[in-house]
Amino acid sequence: MKKISVILLLLVGTVSVFVALKPHKPKRPNIVFIMSDDHAYQAISAYDKRLTNTPNIDRIAKDGMLFTNACVTNSICAPSRAVILTGKHSHINGKVDNYFPFDTTNITFPQLLQANGYQTAMFGKLHFGNNPKGFDEFQILPDQGNYYNPDIITKKEGPKKLMGYVTDLITDITLNWLKNERDPDKPFFLAYLHKAPHREWIPAERHYKEFIHKTFPEPSTLYDNYEGRGSAAKEAEMNLLKHMNWAGDSKVFPENMKKLGIKESHSYDIALYNATVGRMNPEQRKVWDDTYRPMNEEFMKKYPSMTEKEKMQWRYQRYMQDYLGCIASVDEGVGKVLDFLKENGLDENTIVVYTSDQGFYLGEHGWFDKRFIFDESFKTPLIVKWPGIIKAGSKNSQMVQNLDFAQTFLEAAGIKPPSDMQGESLIPIFKGQGKNFRDAAYYHYYEYPSVHMVKRHYGIVTEQFKLIHFYYDVDEWELYDRRKDKNELKNVYNDPAYGKIKAELHKKLAQLRIKYKDSEELDKMYIAKYKELEKSGKI
Ligand code: SGN
Ligand code: CA
Image 1 (tube, protein in one colour):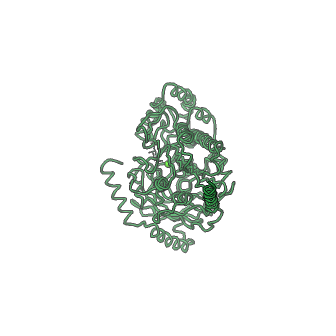
Image 2: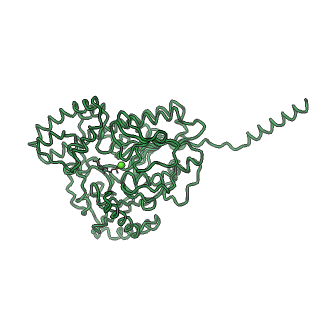
Image 3: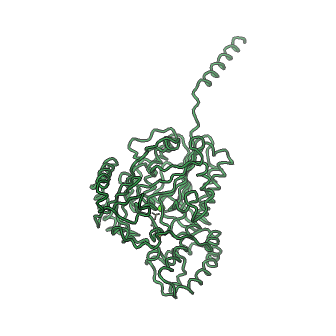
C-alpha cells in the first residue's frame, strides 16, 4: 500500500513538473473580418466627419489602428474578394472581373485555417457564383443579393427566403452563430460581410425616414469637366447627373418620370426600381411610398425649372441620403457584434477588422461607383483592433493592400503561409514596426467594355506619384503628382519637368509586373477570354 502511494506521489510529481516546464502556448486569436460592399472611407467618421457619424465602426479605431492609405489591387467587388481570400493578384487567381467564375481550385486562407483547427463561418455577400470552400458554416446571398426579403443560400438547408432588411438579417445570423453555434474549444474565423451600401442604396425603413430630411456638403470636384486628363475619365459612365438611374437610384416614381418626360438613364432603370419594390410586403411598401411620395411631389414641382447644376445638386443630395442611410444599419450591426464580443469575454483575444471590398465615389469628380486607380476608389477603409498587439488609437499611413490579409491572418494563427501568396503580413505594422513596408503598390483593372465603361488599366502608386497605363481600345499613359495635385486633376505625363521621375516610375512598374508575374501575354489572354464571354452573351 505504502509502495503504491509512493509511486503515485512520484507520478503526480513528475506530471506537475512536466506541466510546469511545458512552454506556455498562447491561445490563438479569433478573427472577426467585417467587410461592407462599396463603403467609402469618406463615409466613416473615424476618417472624415463631414458626411456622417459611425460611432460603432469608430470604436474599432479607438481601440485599434486606422490605416489611412489602405488600398486594393483591383477596385471591383468579386475580384477584390478573390484577392483577399487567395492572397494573390487577380491575374494569378484568375478572378479578374465580376464575370469570370471564381476558380475553386485556388487555395484560400479559410481552408488553411479550417485545416489547422479553426472553426470557420461566413455570412452575407460573397458574389462568386459558387459556394465558399473552407467554411464549417455559411449563409450567403446569391450573386448581388437583395435589400428587402432576400434569398439566401445556406450550407445546411440550401436556398431559403428571409423576411426583413438584409443588413439586419446578416447581423442576426452572425449573432446567432456566435451565441449558439460557436465551438468554445476552438479559435474561430468569422466573415461578416454586408451587402450594404451597394447600389441601389436601399436603407432600412427607420433610416430612409430619417436620412431623407438631411443635407450634406458637396465635394469640391462635383462639377468636374474632366479636362486635364485622358479619355478614360471623360468616357467613364458614372456621372451622377448623366448616368445615375432616376427611378432605381434616385427613387423618382416611374409614373412621375413619365409625367415629367424624364427618360430612363438606362433601359433597366425602371425595371430595377420595380424589382426592388416588388420584393416588399404591403407594410414595407406602404412606408416606402409614404416616405418617398412627399419627396417626389416636391421634385415634380421644381423639376421643370431646374438648371443642370440644380439637377446635379438634387441628385447628389438624394444619393447621399440613401447611401448614408444604408451605412447607418451597418454601423448598428457592427455595434451589436462588438458588444457581444465584449459581454462574452471574447474581445481580448479577438482580432476585429473593418474594411470594404474597395473605395467608392461620393460625388467626387461628379462620380459614383469605383473601378479607377484614382484615390477614392483605389483606397479603401481599413481599421483593425487586436488588444495586446495593436496600440489603441493608433494610425498608420503605409500602403497596405487587401492582398495582405491572407498572410496576416495565417501568421496570426501560427500557420506558415504558402510561398506563392503575394502579399505581406501586416503583423509587424500592428506591432508598431514595419516602417518601410511597401514603397509601391501595383494595380490592375480589367472589366471593360462593361457597365460604367471604365477602361482597362494598370499602374503603380507610390507615396508621391501615380503612373497609369490605359489600354485595350486606347494606349494612353497618365502621371499624377499626388502631393501637389490631391484631387488628381492634372495629368503631367507629358510635362518635361517630370521626365526623370517618369523614367524611374516606368522602370519600377516593369519590375513590379515581373515581381507579381503579370505580363502583356496575360493582358492579351484575359482580353481573349472576355471576348469569348461577350460572344456567348454572358456580358
Ligand atoms: C451592378 C451595379 C453597378 C455596379 C456593378 C458591380 N448596377 O451592375 O453600378 O458597378 O453592379 O458592383 S445596378 O444598377 O444593378 O445596381 S460590384 O460591387 O458588384 O462590383
Ligand atoms: Ca463592391
